[in-house]
Length: 404
Length: 189
Image (tube, one colour):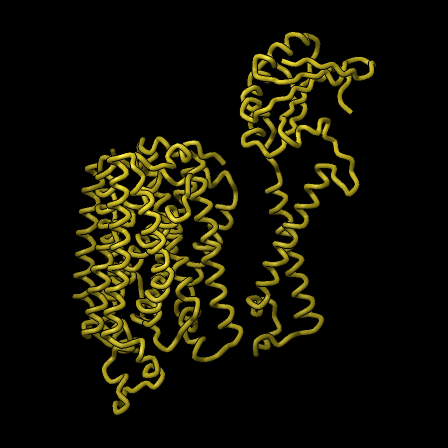
Protein backbone atom coordinates (compact mmCIF):
# COMPACT_ATOMS: atom_id res chain seq x y z
CA UNK A 1 0.00 0.00 0.00
CA UNK A 2 1.16 3.48 -0.87
CA UNK A 3 1.41 6.05 1.91
CA UNK A 4 0.75 9.66 0.89
CA UNK A 5 3.88 11.45 2.20
CA UNK A 6 2.91 14.21 4.63
CA UNK A 7 5.36 16.62 3.02
CA UNK A 8 3.85 16.13 -0.40
CA UNK A 9 0.37 16.62 1.05
CA UNK A 10 1.43 19.90 2.66
CA UNK A 11 3.03 20.97 -0.60
CA UNK A 12 -0.17 20.28 -2.52
CA UNK A 13 -2.20 22.38 -0.02
CA UNK A 14 0.31 25.23 -0.41
CA UNK A 15 0.04 24.98 -4.19
CA UNK A 16 -3.76 25.06 -4.02
CA UNK A 17 -3.56 28.18 -1.82
CA UNK A 18 -1.26 29.84 -4.39
CA UNK A 19 -3.75 28.93 -7.08
CA UNK A 20 -6.66 30.47 -5.21
CA UNK A 21 -4.65 33.64 -4.58
CA UNK A 22 -3.68 33.79 -8.25
CA UNK A 23 -7.29 33.37 -9.30
CA UNK A 24 -8.46 36.17 -6.98
CA UNK A 25 -5.55 38.34 -8.12
CA UNK A 26 -6.50 37.64 -11.72
CA UNK A 27 -10.09 38.74 -11.22
CA UNK A 28 -9.10 41.85 -9.25
CA UNK A 29 -6.47 42.95 -11.77
CA UNK A 30 -8.73 42.10 -14.71
CA UNK A 31 -11.04 44.66 -16.26
CA UNK A 32 -9.41 48.04 -16.79
CA UNK A 33 -8.71 49.19 -20.29
CA UNK A 34 -10.28 47.45 -23.23
CA UNK A 35 -8.06 45.58 -25.63
CA UNK A 36 -8.05 42.80 -28.20
CA UNK A 37 -10.40 42.07 -31.02
CA UNK A 38 -13.47 41.35 -28.92
CA UNK A 39 -12.86 44.24 -26.58
CA UNK A 40 -12.82 41.79 -23.65
CA UNK A 41 -9.14 40.89 -23.53
CA UNK A 42 -8.33 41.92 -19.98
CA UNK A 43 -11.63 40.80 -18.49
CA UNK A 44 -11.08 37.46 -20.15
CA UNK A 45 -7.61 36.88 -18.80
CA UNK A 46 -8.50 35.17 -15.49
CA UNK A 47 -11.20 33.10 -17.20
CA UNK A 48 -8.83 32.17 -20.01
CA UNK A 49 -6.24 31.16 -17.45
CA UNK A 50 -8.84 28.99 -15.70
CA UNK A 51 -9.88 27.40 -19.00
CA UNK A 52 -6.29 26.74 -20.10
CA UNK A 53 -5.25 25.11 -16.85
CA UNK A 54 -8.48 23.25 -16.31
CA UNK A 55 -8.52 21.90 -19.83
CA UNK A 56 -4.88 20.88 -19.53
CA UNK A 57 -5.46 18.82 -16.39
CA UNK A 58 -8.81 17.54 -17.63
CA UNK A 59 -6.94 16.34 -20.72
CA UNK A 60 -4.38 14.51 -18.60
CA UNK A 61 -7.11 12.66 -16.70
CA UNK A 62 -9.09 11.94 -19.83
CA UNK A 63 -6.02 10.70 -21.71
CA UNK A 64 -5.21 8.37 -18.80
CA UNK A 65 -8.79 7.07 -18.79
CA UNK A 66 -8.54 6.44 -22.53
CA UNK A 67 -5.27 4.55 -22.07
CA UNK A 68 -6.81 2.54 -19.21
CA UNK A 69 -9.79 1.59 -21.38
CA UNK A 70 -7.47 0.56 -24.21
CA UNK A 71 -5.60 -1.77 -21.84
CA UNK A 72 -8.83 -3.59 -20.98
CA UNK A 73 -10.34 -3.59 -24.46
CA UNK A 74 -7.15 -4.94 -26.05
CA UNK A 75 -6.41 -7.47 -23.25
CA UNK A 76 -3.00 -5.94 -22.70
CA UNK A 77 -0.57 -7.89 -20.54
CA UNK A 78 2.50 -5.75 -19.95
CA UNK A 79 0.61 -2.84 -18.39
CA UNK A 80 -1.13 -4.79 -15.59
CA UNK A 81 1.24 -3.22 -13.06
CA UNK A 82 0.45 0.39 -13.97
CA UNK A 83 -3.36 0.21 -14.23
CA UNK A 84 -3.77 1.63 -10.72
CA UNK A 85 -1.64 4.63 -11.74
CA UNK A 86 -3.95 5.26 -14.68
CA UNK A 87 -6.96 4.93 -12.37
CA UNK A 88 -5.34 7.41 -10.02
CA UNK A 89 -4.61 9.96 -12.75
CA UNK A 90 -8.11 9.65 -14.24
CA UNK A 91 -9.50 10.35 -10.74
CA UNK A 92 -9.10 14.08 -11.32
CA UNK A 93 -11.79 13.95 -14.00
CA UNK A 94 -14.83 14.83 -11.82
CA UNK A 95 -13.11 17.90 -10.37
CA UNK A 96 -11.91 19.21 -13.73
CA UNK A 97 -15.31 18.33 -15.18
CA UNK A 98 -17.18 20.41 -12.61
CA UNK A 99 -14.91 23.41 -13.20
CA UNK A 100 -15.40 22.97 -16.95
CA UNK A 101 -19.18 23.06 -16.44
CA UNK A 102 -18.77 26.23 -14.35
CA UNK A 103 -16.70 27.89 -17.09
CA UNK A 104 -19.22 26.91 -19.75
CA UNK A 105 -22.25 28.03 -17.70
CA UNK A 106 -20.53 31.32 -16.87
CA UNK A 107 -19.85 31.79 -20.57
CA UNK A 108 -23.42 31.02 -21.59
CA UNK A 109 -24.79 33.47 -19.00
CA UNK A 110 -22.40 36.21 -20.12
CA UNK A 111 -20.22 36.20 -17.02
CA UNK A 112 -17.23 35.68 -19.27
CA UNK A 113 -16.65 36.32 -22.96
CA UNK A 114 -14.41 33.44 -23.87
CA UNK A 115 -16.73 32.28 -26.62
CA UNK A 116 -17.14 34.92 -29.26
CA UNK A 117 -20.33 33.37 -30.67
CA UNK A 118 -22.21 34.05 -27.40
CA UNK A 119 -21.75 37.81 -27.83
CA UNK A 120 -24.97 39.79 -27.65
CA UNK A 121 -26.69 40.40 -31.01
CA UNK A 122 -24.25 38.31 -33.01
CA UNK A 123 -27.00 35.91 -34.10
CA UNK A 124 -29.65 38.62 -34.50
CA UNK A 125 -30.09 39.78 -38.14
CA UNK A 126 -31.47 43.12 -36.88
CA UNK A 127 -28.44 43.90 -34.74
CA UNK A 128 -25.39 45.99 -35.69
CA UNK A 129 -23.18 43.16 -34.44
CA UNK A 130 -24.83 40.56 -36.68
CA UNK A 131 -22.35 38.05 -38.10
CA UNK A 132 -23.78 35.97 -40.90
CA UNK A 133 -21.00 33.34 -40.78
CA UNK A 134 -21.61 32.66 -37.11
CA UNK A 135 -25.35 32.76 -37.72
CA UNK A 136 -24.83 29.89 -40.15
CA UNK A 137 -23.47 27.76 -37.29
CA UNK A 138 -26.52 28.41 -35.08
CA UNK A 139 -27.81 24.84 -35.33
CA UNK A 140 -24.73 23.59 -33.49
CA UNK A 141 -23.43 26.63 -31.63
CA UNK A 142 -26.32 27.67 -29.45
CA UNK A 143 -26.41 28.01 -25.67
CA UNK A 144 -28.82 25.18 -24.68
CA UNK A 145 -27.19 22.59 -26.93
CA UNK A 146 -23.73 23.70 -25.83
CA UNK A 147 -24.62 23.24 -22.15
CA UNK A 148 -26.24 19.86 -22.84
CA UNK A 149 -23.16 18.66 -24.74
CA UNK A 150 -20.82 19.73 -21.97
CA UNK A 151 -22.93 17.87 -19.41
CA UNK A 152 -23.08 14.74 -21.59
CA UNK A 153 -19.30 14.68 -22.07
CA UNK A 154 -18.49 15.14 -18.42
CA UNK A 155 -21.14 12.71 -17.17
CA UNK A 156 -20.19 10.06 -19.73
CA UNK A 157 -16.49 10.24 -18.94
CA UNK A 158 -17.00 10.32 -15.17
CA UNK A 159 -19.35 7.33 -15.45
CA UNK A 160 -16.71 5.29 -17.28
CA UNK A 161 -14.00 6.40 -14.84
CA UNK A 162 -16.06 5.54 -11.74
CA UNK A 163 -17.28 2.22 -13.15
CA UNK A 164 -13.80 1.01 -14.12
CA UNK A 165 -12.56 1.98 -10.67
CA UNK A 166 -15.43 0.19 -8.91
CA UNK A 167 -14.85 -2.96 -10.96
CA UNK A 168 -11.09 -2.96 -10.42
CA UNK A 169 -11.56 -2.63 -6.64
CA UNK A 170 -13.52 -5.90 -6.84
CA UNK A 171 -10.38 -7.42 -8.30
CA UNK A 172 -8.70 -6.90 -4.92
CA UNK A 173 -11.41 -8.85 -3.11
CA UNK A 174 -11.89 -12.10 -4.99
CA UNK A 175 -10.22 -14.18 -7.67
CA UNK A 176 -13.46 -14.37 -9.64
CA UNK A 177 -12.80 -12.69 -12.99
CA UNK A 178 -16.32 -11.35 -13.65
CA UNK A 179 -15.05 -7.83 -12.90
CA UNK A 180 -12.38 -8.17 -15.58
CA UNK A 181 -14.84 -9.24 -18.27
CA UNK A 182 -17.19 -6.44 -17.28
CA UNK A 183 -14.34 -3.95 -17.47
CA UNK A 184 -13.75 -4.97 -21.08
CA UNK A 185 -17.38 -4.22 -21.93
CA UNK A 186 -17.35 -0.88 -20.11
CA UNK A 187 -14.07 0.06 -21.80
CA UNK A 188 -15.40 -0.79 -25.25
CA UNK A 189 -18.49 1.35 -24.69
CA UNK A 190 -16.37 4.20 -23.36
CA UNK A 191 -13.94 4.03 -26.30
CA UNK A 192 -16.77 4.47 -28.81
CA UNK A 193 -18.19 7.34 -26.76
CA UNK A 194 -14.71 8.85 -26.41
CA UNK A 195 -13.99 8.59 -30.14
CA UNK A 196 -16.86 10.99 -30.81
CA UNK A 197 -16.79 13.18 -27.72
CA UNK A 198 -13.03 13.78 -27.68
CA UNK A 199 -13.41 15.49 -31.05
CA UNK A 200 -16.63 17.36 -30.33
CA UNK A 201 -15.41 18.50 -26.90
CA UNK A 202 -12.29 19.93 -28.55
CA UNK A 203 -14.46 21.74 -31.11
CA UNK A 204 -16.78 23.07 -28.44
CA UNK A 205 -14.43 24.14 -25.70
CA UNK A 206 -11.38 25.17 -27.74
CA UNK A 207 -12.12 25.56 -31.45
CA UNK A 208 -15.32 27.59 -30.98
CA UNK A 209 -13.21 30.31 -29.35
CA UNK A 210 -12.04 31.24 -32.84
CA UNK A 211 -15.59 30.94 -34.12
CA UNK A 212 -15.04 31.76 -37.78
CA UNK A 213 -12.23 29.32 -38.20
CA UNK A 214 -12.57 25.58 -38.40
CA UNK A 215 -10.31 22.61 -38.96
CA UNK A 216 -11.53 19.07 -39.52
CA UNK A 217 -8.67 17.40 -37.71
CA UNK A 218 -8.69 19.75 -34.73
CA UNK A 219 -10.22 17.07 -32.48
CA UNK A 220 -7.42 14.61 -33.17
CA UNK A 221 -4.83 17.30 -32.78
CA UNK A 222 -6.17 18.10 -29.31
CA UNK A 223 -6.43 14.38 -28.53
CA UNK A 224 -2.79 13.80 -29.50
CA UNK A 225 -1.81 16.60 -27.12
CA UNK A 226 -3.79 15.27 -24.16
CA UNK A 227 -2.59 11.72 -24.80
CA UNK A 228 1.06 12.75 -24.70
CA UNK A 229 0.42 14.75 -21.51
CA UNK A 230 -1.36 11.78 -19.92
CA UNK A 231 1.37 9.27 -20.80
CA UNK A 232 4.05 11.66 -19.59
CA UNK A 233 2.25 12.23 -16.30
CA UNK A 234 1.83 8.48 -15.81
CA UNK A 235 5.52 7.90 -16.53
CA UNK A 236 6.52 10.68 -14.10
CA UNK A 237 4.35 9.21 -11.33
CA UNK A 238 5.70 5.71 -12.04
CA UNK A 239 9.27 7.02 -11.80
CA UNK A 240 8.45 8.91 -8.58
CA UNK A 241 6.89 5.83 -6.96
CA UNK A 242 9.68 3.54 -8.16
CA UNK A 243 12.31 5.89 -6.74
CA UNK A 244 10.46 5.83 -3.43
CA UNK A 245 10.57 2.05 -3.24
CA UNK A 246 7.10 1.19 -4.52
CA UNK A 247 6.08 -0.74 -7.64
CA UNK A 248 8.66 -3.53 -7.15
CA UNK A 249 7.01 -5.41 -10.07
CA UNK A 250 7.91 -2.64 -12.50
CA UNK A 251 11.17 -3.04 -14.41
CA UNK A 252 13.10 -1.01 -16.97
CA UNK A 253 11.11 -2.53 -19.80
CA UNK A 254 7.83 -1.06 -18.54
CA UNK A 255 9.40 2.37 -18.28
CA UNK A 256 10.94 1.81 -21.72
CA UNK A 257 7.48 1.12 -23.13
CA UNK A 258 6.02 4.25 -21.58
CA UNK A 259 8.98 6.14 -23.06
CA UNK A 260 8.20 4.66 -26.47
CA UNK A 261 4.60 5.80 -26.15
CA UNK A 262 5.75 9.31 -25.23
CA UNK A 263 8.11 9.34 -28.19
CA UNK A 264 5.63 7.92 -30.69
CA UNK A 265 2.76 10.17 -29.70
CA UNK A 266 4.99 13.26 -29.68
CA UNK A 267 5.70 12.46 -33.33
CA UNK A 268 1.99 11.80 -33.91
CA UNK A 269 1.14 15.16 -32.37
CA UNK A 270 3.65 16.88 -34.66
CA UNK A 271 2.26 15.02 -37.64
CA UNK A 272 -1.24 16.34 -36.91
CA UNK A 273 0.06 19.82 -36.12
CA UNK A 274 1.85 19.91 -39.44
CA UNK A 275 -1.02 18.38 -41.43
CA UNK A 276 -3.32 21.08 -40.10
CA UNK A 277 -0.80 23.83 -40.75
CA UNK A 278 0.42 22.76 -44.18
CA UNK A 279 -3.00 22.55 -45.85
CA UNK A 280 -3.91 26.00 -44.57
CA UNK A 281 -0.51 27.46 -45.49
CA UNK A 282 -0.69 25.92 -48.96
CA UNK A 283 -4.19 27.00 -49.94
CA UNK A 284 -3.76 30.45 -48.35
CA UNK A 285 -7.50 31.15 -47.98
CA UNK A 286 -8.17 34.24 -45.79
CA UNK A 287 -10.83 32.63 -43.57
CA UNK A 288 -8.41 29.80 -42.73
CA UNK A 289 -5.13 31.65 -42.36
CA UNK A 290 -6.63 34.05 -39.79
CA UNK A 291 -5.95 31.32 -37.22
CA UNK A 292 -2.23 31.32 -37.94
CA UNK A 293 -1.77 35.08 -38.37
CA UNK A 294 -1.45 35.88 -34.64
CA UNK A 295 0.32 32.59 -34.00
CA UNK A 296 3.02 33.46 -36.50
CA UNK A 297 2.83 37.13 -35.55
CA UNK A 298 2.60 38.26 -31.93
CA UNK A 299 2.78 34.68 -30.61
CA UNK A 300 5.64 33.53 -32.83
CA UNK A 301 8.21 33.15 -30.08
CA UNK A 302 5.97 30.99 -27.92
CA UNK A 303 4.66 29.08 -30.90
CA UNK A 304 8.13 28.09 -32.13
CA UNK A 305 9.32 27.34 -28.58
CA UNK A 306 6.31 25.06 -28.16
CA UNK A 307 7.16 23.18 -31.36
CA UNK A 308 10.76 22.71 -30.31
CA UNK A 309 9.71 21.42 -26.86
CA UNK A 310 7.06 19.07 -28.19
CA UNK A 311 8.79 17.80 -31.30
CA UNK A 312 12.53 18.39 -31.67
CA UNK A 313 13.34 17.73 -28.03
CA UNK A 314 11.63 14.32 -27.74
CA UNK A 315 12.65 13.41 -31.31
CA UNK A 316 16.35 13.89 -30.73
CA UNK A 317 16.56 12.78 -27.13
CA UNK A 318 13.99 9.99 -26.82
CA UNK A 319 15.08 8.30 -30.06
CA UNK A 320 17.78 6.23 -28.43
CA UNK A 321 16.93 3.11 -26.47
CA UNK A 322 19.17 3.97 -23.56
CA UNK A 323 17.54 7.34 -22.90
CA UNK A 324 14.11 5.69 -22.70
CA UNK A 325 15.39 3.24 -20.10
CA UNK A 326 17.04 5.88 -17.95
CA UNK A 327 14.73 7.28 -15.24
CA UNK A 328 16.51 10.62 -14.94
CA UNK A 329 16.49 11.24 -18.66
CA UNK A 330 12.87 10.27 -19.04
CA UNK A 331 11.80 12.42 -16.10
CA UNK A 332 13.63 15.45 -17.54
CA UNK A 333 12.01 14.97 -20.94
CA UNK A 334 8.69 14.44 -19.16
CA UNK A 335 8.86 17.82 -17.46
CA UNK A 336 9.73 19.51 -20.77
CA UNK A 337 6.84 17.76 -22.50
CA UNK A 338 4.39 18.77 -19.76
CA UNK A 339 5.46 22.41 -20.11
CA UNK A 340 5.37 22.16 -23.89
CA UNK A 341 1.85 20.80 -23.98
CA UNK A 342 0.67 23.35 -21.45
CA UNK A 343 2.06 25.99 -23.81
CA UNK A 344 0.20 24.29 -26.65
CA UNK A 345 -3.12 24.68 -24.81
CA UNK A 346 -2.16 28.25 -23.91
CA UNK A 347 -1.58 29.13 -27.57
CA UNK A 348 -4.80 27.44 -28.65
CA UNK A 349 -6.87 29.51 -26.21
CA UNK A 350 -5.12 32.86 -25.75
CA UNK A 351 -5.17 34.58 -29.17
CA UNK A 352 -8.97 34.30 -29.39
CA UNK A 353 -9.73 35.24 -25.79
CA UNK A 354 -7.10 37.50 -24.26
CA UNK A 355 -5.89 38.72 -27.62
CA UNK A 356 -2.64 40.15 -28.80
CA UNK A 357 -1.92 42.08 -25.59
CA UNK A 358 -1.05 38.88 -23.73
CA UNK A 359 1.54 37.88 -21.20
CA UNK A 360 2.25 34.85 -19.06
CA UNK A 361 2.27 36.13 -15.51
CA UNK A 362 1.09 35.26 -12.02
CA UNK A 363 -2.49 34.77 -13.24
CA UNK A 364 -1.44 31.90 -15.52
CA UNK A 365 1.44 30.34 -13.58
CA UNK A 366 -0.25 30.69 -10.18
CA UNK A 367 -3.45 29.03 -11.39
CA UNK A 368 -1.33 26.29 -12.99
CA UNK A 369 0.35 25.67 -9.63
CA UNK A 370 -3.07 25.60 -7.96
CA UNK A 371 -4.31 22.95 -10.36
CA UNK A 372 -1.07 21.03 -9.96
CA UNK A 373 -1.63 21.02 -6.19
CA UNK A 374 -5.21 19.82 -6.58
CA UNK A 375 -4.10 17.20 -9.07
CA UNK A 376 -1.38 15.85 -6.76
CA UNK A 377 -3.79 15.81 -3.81
CA UNK A 378 -6.54 13.93 -5.69
CA UNK A 379 -4.30 11.51 -7.58
CA UNK A 380 -2.07 10.52 -4.67
CA UNK A 381 -4.95 10.17 -2.21
CA UNK A 382 -6.53 7.85 -4.71
CA UNK A 383 -3.32 5.86 -5.10
CA UNK A 384 -3.15 5.51 -1.31
CA UNK A 385 -6.68 4.07 -1.08
CA UNK A 386 -5.97 0.74 -2.78
CA UNK A 387 -2.99 -1.53 -3.45
CA UNK A 388 -0.79 -0.16 -6.23
CA UNK A 389 -1.54 -3.23 -8.31
CA UNK A 390 -4.88 -4.97 -8.79
CA UNK A 391 -4.40 -8.04 -6.59
CA UNK A 392 -6.18 -10.52 -8.85
CA UNK A 393 -5.51 -9.07 -12.28
CA UNK A 394 -5.13 -12.06 -14.62
CA UNK A 395 -2.11 -10.52 -16.37
CA UNK A 396 -0.03 -9.72 -13.26
CA UNK A 397 2.39 -12.60 -13.84
CA UNK A 398 2.76 -11.79 -17.52
CA UNK A 399 3.46 -8.17 -16.66
CA UNK A 400 6.15 -9.16 -14.14
CA UNK A 401 8.05 -11.14 -16.77
CA UNK A 402 7.76 -8.38 -19.33
CA UNK A 403 11.13 -7.94 -20.99
CA UNK A 404 12.16 -6.16 -24.18
CA UNK B 1 35.43 -22.64 -42.25
CA UNK B 2 35.98 -22.83 -38.58
CA UNK B 3 39.12 -22.66 -36.54
CA UNK B 4 40.80 -26.06 -36.85
CA UNK B 5 42.75 -25.71 -33.64
CA UNK B 6 39.63 -26.62 -31.76
CA UNK B 7 37.12 -29.39 -32.07
CA UNK B 8 33.45 -28.57 -32.39
CA UNK B 9 30.55 -30.42 -30.91
CA UNK B 10 26.96 -29.83 -31.91
CA UNK B 11 24.30 -30.36 -29.31
CA UNK B 12 20.55 -30.58 -29.86
CA UNK B 13 17.76 -29.67 -27.46
CA UNK B 14 14.06 -30.16 -27.95
CA UNK B 15 13.00 -27.17 -25.85
CA UNK B 16 14.05 -23.53 -26.15
CA UNK B 17 13.93 -22.93 -22.39
CA UNK B 18 16.18 -25.94 -21.70
CA UNK B 19 18.65 -24.69 -24.29
CA UNK B 20 18.55 -21.16 -22.91
CA UNK B 21 19.21 -22.39 -19.35
CA UNK B 22 22.12 -24.59 -20.47
CA UNK B 23 24.03 -21.72 -22.07
CA UNK B 24 25.12 -20.08 -18.84
CA UNK B 25 26.81 -23.14 -17.29
CA UNK B 26 28.48 -23.97 -20.64
CA UNK B 27 29.94 -20.49 -20.95
CA UNK B 28 30.93 -20.44 -17.28
CA UNK B 29 33.09 -23.51 -17.89
CA UNK B 30 34.98 -21.48 -20.49
CA UNK B 31 33.61 -23.11 -23.64
CA UNK B 32 32.93 -20.89 -26.60
CA UNK B 33 29.54 -21.23 -28.29
CA UNK B 34 30.20 -20.67 -31.97
CA UNK B 35 26.66 -20.56 -33.26
CA UNK B 36 23.07 -21.28 -32.29
CA UNK B 37 20.37 -22.55 -34.67
CA UNK B 38 16.72 -22.24 -33.70
CA UNK B 39 13.45 -22.61 -35.63
CA UNK B 40 12.20 -19.26 -34.30
CA UNK B 41 13.72 -16.23 -32.56
CA UNK B 42 14.31 -17.17 -28.92
CA UNK B 43 13.81 -14.23 -26.58
CA UNK B 44 16.93 -13.43 -24.57
CA UNK B 45 19.23 -15.74 -26.60
CA UNK B 46 21.52 -12.94 -27.78
CA UNK B 47 21.86 -11.74 -24.21
CA UNK B 48 22.73 -15.25 -22.92
CA UNK B 49 25.27 -15.76 -25.69
CA UNK B 50 26.91 -12.48 -24.70
CA UNK B 51 26.57 -10.96 -28.18
CA UNK B 52 27.21 -7.25 -28.60
CA UNK B 53 24.11 -5.12 -29.23
CA UNK B 54 23.32 -4.52 -32.88
CA UNK B 55 24.55 -1.27 -34.38
CA UNK B 56 21.67 -1.27 -36.83
CA UNK B 57 20.01 1.67 -35.01
CA UNK B 58 23.09 3.83 -35.57
CA UNK B 59 23.19 2.99 -39.27
CA UNK B 60 19.45 3.76 -39.49
CA UNK B 61 20.06 7.23 -38.09
CA UNK B 62 22.94 7.85 -40.52
CA UNK B 63 20.94 6.58 -43.52
CA UNK B 64 17.99 8.75 -42.48
CA UNK B 65 20.28 11.79 -42.30
CA UNK B 66 21.64 10.97 -45.77
CA UNK B 67 18.07 10.65 -47.11
CA UNK B 68 17.13 13.99 -45.59
CA UNK B 69 20.16 15.66 -47.18
CA UNK B 70 19.42 14.13 -50.57
CA UNK B 71 15.81 15.31 -50.35
CA UNK B 72 16.90 18.84 -49.45
CA UNK B 73 19.30 18.89 -52.40
CA UNK B 74 16.64 17.42 -54.71
CA UNK B 75 13.90 19.91 -53.78
CA UNK B 76 16.36 22.81 -53.83
CA UNK B 77 17.68 21.98 -57.27
CA UNK B 78 14.42 20.99 -58.98
CA UNK B 79 12.00 23.47 -57.39
CA UNK B 80 14.17 26.54 -56.75
CA UNK B 81 17.27 26.54 -58.97
CA UNK B 82 16.53 24.65 -62.15
CA UNK B 83 12.88 25.57 -62.62
CA UNK B 84 11.68 28.04 -59.97
CA UNK B 85 8.15 27.18 -58.92
CA UNK B 86 5.39 29.42 -57.67
CA UNK B 87 4.18 27.35 -54.73
CA UNK B 88 0.71 27.98 -53.32
CA UNK B 89 0.51 31.47 -54.85
CA UNK B 90 3.57 32.54 -52.84
CA UNK B 91 6.26 33.25 -55.43
CA UNK B 92 9.13 33.75 -53.02
CA UNK B 93 11.48 31.36 -54.88
CA UNK B 94 13.45 30.58 -51.75
CA UNK B 95 13.82 27.14 -50.25
CA UNK B 96 13.25 28.34 -46.67
CA UNK B 97 9.90 30.01 -47.26
CA UNK B 98 8.61 27.12 -49.35
CA UNK B 99 9.84 24.51 -46.92
CA UNK B 100 6.37 23.39 -45.67
CA UNK B 101 5.56 22.19 -49.18
CA UNK B 102 8.71 20.06 -49.18
CA UNK B 103 8.19 18.42 -45.80
CA UNK B 104 6.34 15.38 -47.20
CA UNK B 105 9.25 14.81 -49.61
CA UNK B 106 11.83 15.28 -46.86
CA UNK B 107 9.94 12.82 -44.68
CA UNK B 108 9.45 10.18 -47.37
CA UNK B 109 13.05 10.30 -48.58
CA UNK B 110 14.30 9.99 -45.00
CA UNK B 111 12.15 6.90 -44.45
CA UNK B 112 12.99 5.46 -47.88
CA UNK B 113 16.73 5.76 -47.40
CA UNK B 114 16.68 4.50 -43.83
CA UNK B 115 14.50 1.48 -44.66
CA UNK B 116 16.14 0.38 -47.90
CA UNK B 117 19.74 0.89 -46.86
CA UNK B 118 19.02 -0.96 -43.60
CA UNK B 119 17.75 -3.96 -45.55
CA UNK B 120 20.87 -4.00 -47.76
CA UNK B 121 23.11 -3.54 -44.74
CA UNK B 122 21.42 -6.49 -43.12
CA UNK B 123 21.97 -8.68 -46.17
CA UNK B 124 25.60 -7.67 -46.54
CA UNK B 125 26.37 -8.25 -42.86
CA UNK B 126 24.74 -11.68 -43.01
CA UNK B 127 26.43 -12.56 -46.29
CA UNK B 128 23.09 -13.20 -47.92
CA UNK B 129 22.53 -12.97 -51.67
CA UNK B 130 20.14 -14.65 -54.15
CA UNK B 131 21.02 -18.29 -54.73
CA UNK B 132 23.08 -18.54 -51.57
CA UNK B 133 23.28 -22.10 -50.27
CA UNK B 134 21.80 -22.57 -46.80
CA UNK B 135 24.39 -22.77 -44.03
CA UNK B 136 22.15 -24.69 -41.68
CA UNK B 137 23.98 -27.88 -40.62
CA UNK B 138 20.85 -29.72 -39.49
CA UNK B 139 17.40 -29.26 -41.08
CA UNK B 140 15.74 -30.31 -37.85
CA UNK B 141 16.58 -26.88 -36.44
CA UNK B 142 14.03 -25.43 -38.83
CA UNK B 143 11.37 -27.66 -37.30
CA UNK B 144 11.41 -28.55 -33.61
CA UNK B 145 15.05 -28.76 -32.53
CA UNK B 146 17.43 -26.20 -31.06
CA UNK B 147 21.13 -26.56 -31.72
CA UNK B 148 24.30 -25.09 -30.28
CA UNK B 149 27.78 -25.49 -31.77
CA UNK B 150 30.40 -25.53 -29.06
CA UNK B 151 34.16 -25.27 -29.53
CA UNK B 152 36.38 -27.22 -27.15
CA UNK B 153 39.98 -28.13 -26.56
CA UNK B 154 40.23 -31.73 -25.38
CA UNK B 155 38.16 -33.10 -22.50
CA UNK B 156 35.36 -34.26 -24.75
CA UNK B 157 33.83 -36.67 -22.24
CA UNK B 158 33.64 -33.93 -19.64
CA UNK B 159 31.78 -31.64 -22.04
CA UNK B 160 29.41 -34.43 -23.09
CA UNK B 161 28.59 -35.12 -19.44
CA UNK B 162 27.95 -31.41 -18.81
CA UNK B 163 25.60 -31.20 -21.80
CA UNK B 164 23.75 -34.36 -20.81
CA UNK B 165 23.25 -32.96 -17.33
CA UNK B 166 21.64 -29.89 -18.87
CA UNK B 167 19.06 -31.69 -20.96
CA UNK B 168 20.77 -32.31 -24.32
CA UNK B 169 18.92 -34.90 -26.41
CA UNK B 170 21.68 -35.49 -28.97
CA UNK B 171 25.39 -34.73 -29.10
CA UNK B 172 27.55 -34.99 -32.22
CA UNK B 173 31.20 -34.32 -32.78
CA UNK B 174 31.19 -32.34 -36.03
CA UNK B 175 34.77 -31.10 -36.35
CA UNK B 176 37.95 -32.49 -34.93
CA UNK B 177 41.07 -30.49 -34.26
CA UNK B 178 44.20 -31.11 -36.39
CA UNK B 179 43.92 -31.97 -40.07
CA UNK B 180 41.66 -34.97 -39.82
CA UNK B 181 38.42 -35.00 -41.75
CA UNK B 182 35.24 -34.33 -39.73
CA UNK B 183 33.85 -37.53 -38.39
CA UNK B 184 30.27 -38.12 -37.37
CA UNK B 185 29.49 -39.85 -34.17
CA UNK B 186 26.16 -40.19 -32.46
CA UNK B 187 25.25 -40.61 -28.86
CA UNK B 188 21.77 -40.40 -27.50
CA UNK B 189 21.35 -39.13 -24.03
